[in-house]
Image 1 (cartoon, rainbow, N blue to C red):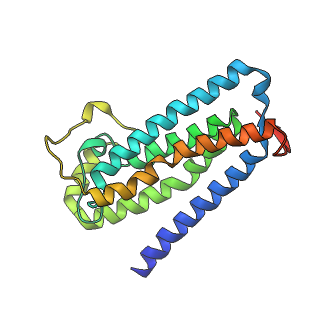
Image 2 (image 1 turned 135 degrees about the vertical axis):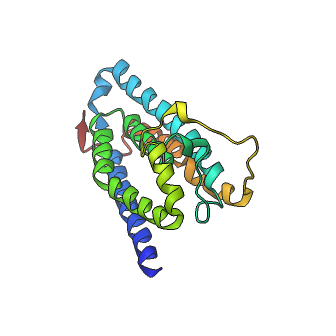
Length: 203
């Protein structure tokens, strides 16, 4: 149990350190694409679309797993599309926030970091679920892709009992990508006003 808690805390801590590092880079970085307003705006809008999809997707996941994740194997809703929809939508949201900086380099770095770090996290969680649910989880693994959703597999129950207290707590985590985009717009305005210095420009 202690090892599990240490693993969870280290994972969260590392993710937060990386998020802070990216935020600091974004804080003092301006986009070279602002010299080409149409392209810069396209990057920002693409980021907003991804953030919107990610936020709705994370809320959808939270609806199904809030209060059930520890004791049940959820295989319907977003979890019928792929085995790790929460991570999939989180990746979309992180890349979306990166694109909202109107750069290509920042979302590229985010994507590479995710590809290097999260496969091990996903594998460790799958091993835990395999130990908890044995044959049922093996059947699930053989039927549903690991990461990329497959829309044709969608199955939803007619009625699903939601734990409102757990879901309410999950809503905050599901929406933080939206708040980050808002903060980026404030940073951009402060840079244009000269309040925040710009130390480098990035493509």
